[in-house]
Image (tube, rainbow, N blue to C red; front, top):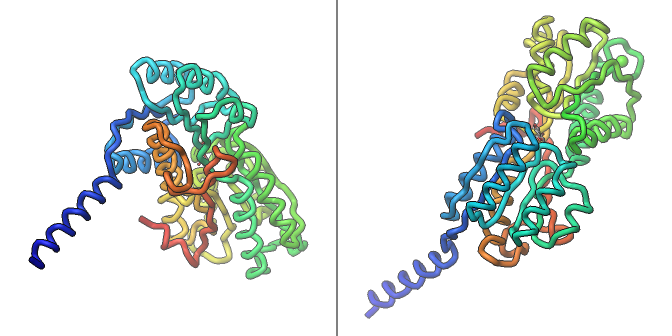
Length: 338
Ligand code: BGC
Ligand code: CA
């Protein structure tokens, strides 16, 4: 008798677990602005892993940094009968026609990483945005510099009480580039430091371009004049570090060290931190962004209501899923290594 009760209980448990994880048969079509982007590769991997758990089908294509190509890819997904779209726009100002394509078909569309303008977000009821508040990452990266200069007064190498810095920006027009630039310097000023900008240029999120730009700054002002480097992402921070290393800096000699901060907490950045080459970064949570995007797409594709309960993430204004950033310093970087 007892045995039967146990078996019955086990059976009920199995059935309810199966119900909770009922596989979707949705086909979700995703476009990534370009595959050759370290951070977006992390998001892509998280999306795939989540769809594997969900049991549906996820197709992901490379838009090769070309908006017209991405528009065609969206058309192709619609004609093959995709049940939802996930789009990382090449150009966030070009999201409107993509929204209209989805709207014409009543298809759910989830934008990620490059935020469409509010008027586009408000023009359709089956549109969502999954991303992170760029202001937060700017503030946190500036704060890392503030903490460092408070703990290391000798970092003010020319002893003028000001921080002489280089800013390396992401792609022009990307909300993360604009806001990280603005809020990182604001945080340093709010932290009580005067700042002097020795150089400021875009390197389009790219490591190699950042090395080139940094070499240019070094030859213009001299490496000794630079007291800090702020980069809008980790790839560019690592690019700047390459240029510093070529001058004998950031190789382990404490008297030849320039604090560099990035954003993302990519594996190579955490590695550079572990070697003492890079001061800090900010976690841009690729895993949770990828998971949330797929969850929203699947729930909407299956005709469900996208709510905090159904996706497991909080939702602002019914359509924004903001994934928090976190400061990553020498004290906690190991937590983020995979
Ligand atoms: C990331 C960058 C990435 C960019 C792509 C940003 O949020 O920090 O590393 O290149 O998104 O759009
Ligand atoms: Ca100084």
